[in-house]
Amino acid sequence: MNLKHIEAFRAVMLAGSMTAAAKELFTSQPNISRLITQLERETGLLLFLRSGVRLIPTSEGNAFFREVERAYVGLQGLTNAAAQIKNLGTGRLRIAAMPSAGLTLVPHAIQRFQALHPEVTISLHVNTSGTVNHWTSSQFCDLGVAVYTSEASNCEIELLSKVAAVCVLPAGHRLAKKATLKPKDLHGERFVSLCHGDGTRAQMDEAFERAGVERVLAIEAQYSAICCEMVRCGMGVTLAHPIVAQDFAGPGIAIRPFTPAVMFPTYLLFPPHQPRARLTLEFAEVLRKTHDEQLAAMEKPERLKRA
Image (cartoon, rainbow, N blue to C red):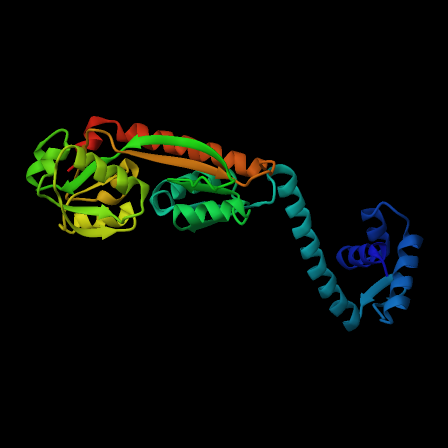
């Protein structure tokens, strides 16, 4: 039994006769008859009852046809997968991101990308920047988005941006009346801080230490998004990436520029020593465009003065 036997059988079942099946397959009626006879001999099944020029499928023939159709669905899936691989790579994209990007920037980019390529399956894996490095380096993920990279990382690294943190505080806070905030403005304030070990936390602490400012460091959280939520609950003030602040602020929150600048870097990571698939490159481009548009929106004065 080979593919020609199956094609002939399927064509007869769908067309209703050997003559019509022959036309469908661009062959002769005797050839179709020969293939069906060979298929019956190979399978040991009686597929059709002959009634003059008519062919009537038997119960065995109908049962076998159902299995053939299942197989054809699988073959069509392989055909579609091959087309995706040819055009876009694997047809599947795995993205690793630290939470500040995985909860804000990356979902917006995925939405835009899927509008362009609805056939592509996308998996988003969110964890610390260190884990994002590991996942990308090991090729578990095709692209990583991280806020820091270690010297030991062997990923291919591209700087996406470095943006200045903004101050996030309750809208009714006395400091919300100010257009721009400085470290001295936060002297004695309850401050929701990132946890120790975070590179941005070290930058924040250094800025306040240089200014001789003491904050009330009563609350720490691992991610900026959580810090913003704690501010919304009235638990203090914080410094956050502007995109995270805007996405998580909500009503009753004020966002103000902060100087001197505390920088949040964002890096794109690619697996090492691997050619970049077209699918990965296209998503990276969409991610860059989405990132730039969100930052441009952040720079509008009315957005940073939101309350």
